[in-house]
Image 1 (cartoon, each protein chain N blue to C red):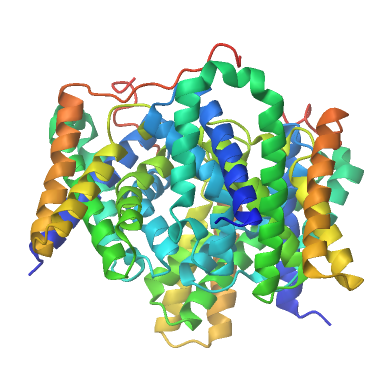
Image 2: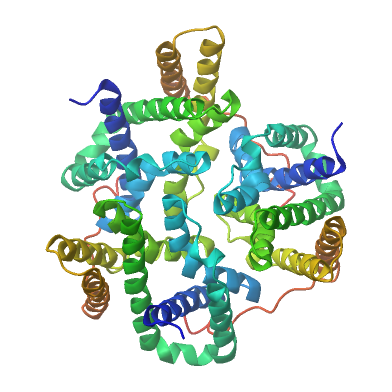
Length: 207
Length: 207
Length: 207
């Protein structure tokens, strides 16, 4: 029986893989290319985190991530044309993935003895770096640097984790609070189109 | 005296470096930039593999790869204009490199105790990831995601390795079979322009 | 009290972060995106080096780099429009950073027992790879592959380190010589617009 966290992890991986495969399909990648982009979108953040923490990346010990990406590819091949009508569903899944990946990243770093400020960065990398790989592969400027609050939601969630931990709450309560925070910040940011200020100090002059 | 595998490794490195240097020259990189792109094309796949496997990358213990890239650069500087007439020669060399790098990647992962499904991924990364670096550096969408069967040849070769191993053949026979498979699949894919299907589920709608 | 090297490290990090943030602002990144690009420009080279050397990246043990990037972002937000008049100041800072990062990279590799040819590569990666990340993130062809002598200054500095070491000079004299060499080569290259030859063997024919 898979645990509750494993099910959430599967949903998050599936949603991230779909996001990579859809953008790859818009660039006319072949099936293999789309699979690779989907896979790297799903596991890229965790892999960078694990390289930095010097532990073996999770996808090298559990074939679940490969299989999950395969199912995501199959899904897009079979139901591609219906996917656009499921935009909201995938947005919810993607936000669940972002929340869960952040919490996993923070928790893993803490358990290895790193201080909280490193753990928050690792949580944000886990959640957001996969999308940077995806955008570099499809030769676009990474979305997270320009649009809506995305990685900032991870940072905010990580800080709530810290605060909960400082006031002595149980680890699982810290995790639920952090995950919910990431999820809610992300949902609110998209719903109300909350963006960070654009940095435009010298855009004209440097041309 | 260099061994047979060392000679093949040299040929593969040379061919991969040439491929990087030629594409860099088409983008008007300077000599240093071309050298770096050539070097990363040659050793990038193996480096990612070794970082994931947590061992020291091979080029940090043997200056052969640096020297070989230097010879490749010299070759392009001196004989650049003849290179286009040697397209077929370099295609053969490149396919030899792909086959050899794949076999080396699979073998190294197995010897470190990883299961076969990880070893096949590592073999494919060894063969194909250098070209992804090359294409990111020259700011193009990685070729392997869009054209002809390239990394898939590594996957197929890795699977032949697995099958040979399952039926109890000697390691060196597994390796020769796997390498030949990569080579033949790659040659056939180019000769008959065999491509994987393009994923085009929603390319219009997402515009 | 911070040491002299820590002050130079701070100046170098600040200058590298400014360089990332300015280029990000020209592409209209938001504050978070600009911060990330600035941070990765500053610590990217050292991180790649530390992953290759299999040690923990420096920024994961000292929050100085995060704080320094934050100050750089604040600086650009507040004084962005004056920055263009400070081009020369930042060019000097950037060259100091390049020199210092190179020396740190060479020294760290030698202290871990690597031979000099590896240490020179690591020094060059420390100095120059951050800028490659920056340019990949803003979706441009990395500048160091095309313009003026940049990473080559690191290579030349690293070789001076080697020569000084071979003739038996004290480590700190080797380091000062190497750092000064990087700095002077870089300044001279820009002042006299010294470029490496462009590799243009087949740029026309491959179109």
